[in-house]
Structure formats: C-alpha cells, structure tokens
Image (cartoon, rainbow, N blue to C red):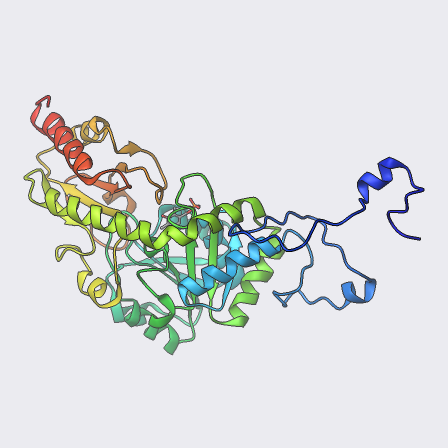
Length: 399
Ligand SMILES: *Cc1c(COP(=O)(O)O)cnc(C)c1O
C-alpha cells in the first residue's frame, strides 16, 4: 500500500504528504536541513552504517547536509581535511581535552591562553586526574625540556588572547613531534586566513566560529580541524559520547557570512593597524601589543608565519594613569562598546589586570592593559572617539 493512499484520513495524509516540489530550483543560499530523525530505506542500510564514515547520515545530532557544507568549507579555509562542529569555541576546546587525554596524562598550556581554557585545564587537574602545567608562550624550542613521558597534549595560541605574544609555532611543534605529543592551536585570531596551522606542524586547529566566521555577534559555534583521520575520529567519538551537536539554522548563518570573511578580515586589519599606529604616538600609551609592531613580543614569528592581523590588539597604559582612569577611558568611548566576544561589525574595548592571570611567565608591565577590537565603523570616527576618551579620562578635558 502506498504511504499516502488517498483513502487515509486527512490527518495521516498531512503527516505523510503527497506530491513533490517542482525540481530545478537553484539559489546561492545553503539549504537548511533540520533533523533529529534521519530515515533509512531499510534495516540493512541502517545496520551497515559506520560512525567513522563522515559521508553517511545517521542522526541529526552528528551531521546534516547543511553542517557538512560548513565543515567542508572550514577544512578548506584552514588547509585541513576534516572539521568537527561544536556549539561554541569553548566547547571545541573542551572536546579536544576529552578526545585526546585520559586520567594520568599531562597537558602543557601557554600562560597567556584564552582564560576559559585555563579554567578548564585547572578543573581537569583538580577533579579528573590530569596534570596541567603552564608554560611561557615565548619558550620556543625549550618546550622540549618540559615534555615528559606522560605529556600527551600541548596547546598553543597564536597570538595569545589579550596579551598578544606570538609563539614560535614551528619550534614547539618540532619538539612535540619528536616526542609523539599531539599539538592543538587556538587559531581564532587568524580565522584560518592569516595563519595556516598545518604548514607549521600543528595537529588540531580550533576555531571560535563565533568570531569572524559568523561576523554578526549573534551566533555561537566552534570547530576543530585536522588533517589526520585518526585524530579526527578521536575527537568525533568524544563529541558523540558527550552528545554534542549544532543546529543547521546556526550553520546556515555562518555559511552566509563566510564568503565575505576575507574582505571583512582585511578591512578590520587596515583600520586596526592605522588606529594602533596613531595610538602608539600618544604619550598615554606605554606599550603597543599589536603583532605587526616590533615591540610586540614574538613579532619575528608573526612576520615569518602570518599574512595579516585582523582587528584585535592591546595597549598598556603608562602606569601614571590609575586603573580607575583607564576604566574611565573605556567608559568614555562612545563607538567602542564594553563586551565579550568580537568578530562582528562593532568595535569593542575591555581593560584587563594581567599580573593576576599569570603563573609561568613574568608580566613586565605595571600599567593597565586595554584590548581593542576594531570593527567596521569609519576609521576617522573611531580615531576621534579614542582621542576624546583619552583627553577626558587622562587629562580631565571635555572635548
Ligand atoms: C571567543 C574565543 C573563544 C571561545 O569562543 P566561544 O564561541 O565564545 O565559546 C576561544 N578562543 C578564543 C581565542 C576566543 O577569542
């Protein structure tokens, strides 16, 4: 009997509808395929499925055609083979820990790492039998001295969140490979555009797609990209065991923003560089922590390995300005908003007290650090805004 036999009740025919949509429709938008249930033609097909095979559809949690379109493009941008989506950048980070480590293993984390990653490392050490050690991000080849037989994972971040030191990625991955240690980089800063991790010996690249890939400050998503099938499968299995997936609707939003990402990244880069160049001439600023500037620690690695910088940079205020004055500067800004996350069109600002966030490397500055994210506003307007806020907060002038 046909499923949609017209002798059946209307309600049944609504659930099992008749008729086909005219084929041949084409558009540029990614089709949004929503599913929990994926339907199989017969039980033999279902029983032949292998979770290792990324091209078989099994369950909406694991993949849909929409999410597969996104993973293919992300792998291509990064220069990898496989990509795994996660519901946030942080969840892409935590999934690496669960996929790679087990009780008794040791992990090395840079001292300047994205703070929630550090929080996770501390938690794994406190409650899950992992040893977590922090290293000076500028350690380079000397990381070899820290690698022990139980070291199974080394994290890198290039440049480090907030303080912007650029590690010598090649020296660290060479030391890790010599001892069979997996390396994972948080590559969010470069969006996979300006730094190609697999050309520098990295095993796993993590992206917070929440940032440039989404571009709208309205989607949370993350990804882990690899070139190695075994590593990909370890991460995929951890993700399946934890029951983590992403919605096709969110994937379609990121897919919509990806074609403009390179142009946006370059626009952020131009404005940020110009504003950093101007800020560097201001007497209130003691240090310019923009990777493209020679005073940024690790600048030589940046010049060697990166093709661009994007919209993020930090400055350290001269310590004659109190933390309260620096707070007042941040609040006096009108076009730079106070808020977490970045990668969208809106400029952001955030002050940080770094010394209390470090345990491995000495933080040399006494003044307050401020991180800027330069959005897509007009550059001259942003500069005027910075100027009026500096004059007001540091010199008591109202402009
Ligand atoms: C934002 C960010 C993350 C986390 O991304 P979420 O999607 O907000 O969880 C991870 N690493 C870096 C460097 C980030 O900037």
